[in-house]
Amino acid sequence: ARDTGGRLVAGDPARLARGVTIDSRRVDRDAVFFAIEGPRHDGHAYAGQAVQAGASVVVAARPLELPPGAALVLVDDTTAALGRLARAERRARGLRVVAVTGSAGKTTTRTLIAAALSGRYRTAASPGNLNNQWGLPLSILGLPDETEVAVLELAMNAPGEIAGLARIAEPDVGVITSIGTAHVGFFPDGIAGIARAKAELLAELPAGARAVLPAAARTLLAPLVPPGLDARWFALDDPSADIAGRVVSTSPIDGTTLAVGDTTVALRLWGRHAAENALAALAAAEALGLDPREAAPLLGAVEPMRGRGRVLRLAGDVLLVDESYNANPSAVRAVLDALAEARDGRRLVAVLGDMLELGDRAAALHREIGEHAARRGVGVLHAVGELAGELADAARGAGLPEVHVHADADAAAEALATTVVPGDLVLVKGSRGVGLERVVARLAESHGGREAC
Image (cartoon, rainbow, N blue to C red):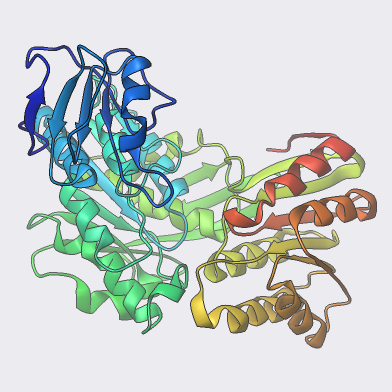
């Protein structure tokens, strides 16, 4: 009760509690259930169910009638209380924390940092996409007991959110992977507003802390770096960067060879965007005392993740690049650029779904991506979703030879299953809400599929 900022109003103060949940369907024995008032459901309506499932304590914002034996802690706001409890846990355990945010590449960079640090520290990273006002506290509260360093992902879609998350995590190292147009619909002043929102992380770092920043966004971010931080800029092919690298080779099958000074990094990940993520990881690891030569071999153990660059080899030597988890304009451009350079004579088939949360710029940004797809040599475009027409029209206008429009992922999946030909390189990428993972599943089912790298 003390750590949540609440007061115990029912139950035994000595009652055992272990573990935290906000989902009444996923309750371990003696867990603490936080009754979160979310956008779709009010957890207060499920508190009794959580107790019946094994919860011993309920944290709520209003009085509740609970089954006998359950403890009830009243707080002003259950989301804020969850954050306070997580911050108290972080302090009590004396964790060292690396916080990662950015418009693209957060999850991959988080995973790479955790791998780089694992050779020296007992390291844990945020699981899945637990990166918002509920997920971040759950990540901290769910860390294994032996954890020394936590690598935590911070996400946002509005100003002020990164600052709030950083006050919970209290990071020792801050990493911004990139600045792009993700969530631009929530920012009237566009990418400048996004940069300010991401830079909220920097304002919460202690004096002298390492800030790892993308040199590609130096113009936007440099004025936002507070005095006294140890700002390190990373980039490919930029000798002026503090952590500079060069891609020796990259392909969806063979991964990436990256040169960083006199150190060679062999990645199973592919594309220049993955190489940039690796540079950020090396800079973060250096802040905790690891030389790049020590950290580099550990990066090679990181595998492409489902929906985030995983490559499947299908029948007929078809390569399927699964980027179905999410999409924003910057990320789509990056992956199209990477595949254009690595396709090695294959026909490039792009299945591109709507990019969500772009506000009144959505139509224009989809048109830009259509034009970019044509410029980068896409041979066949399948546009999926409500804005597919904008994407398709722009691609046709820019000379893309074959363009198809589909209302939803299921229609696209059926079309792809019968039109992919041997040797194709197929990209599937769209925002999570479009459901393009169904296209990946259908192609893997119809053509057979195994990991390619």
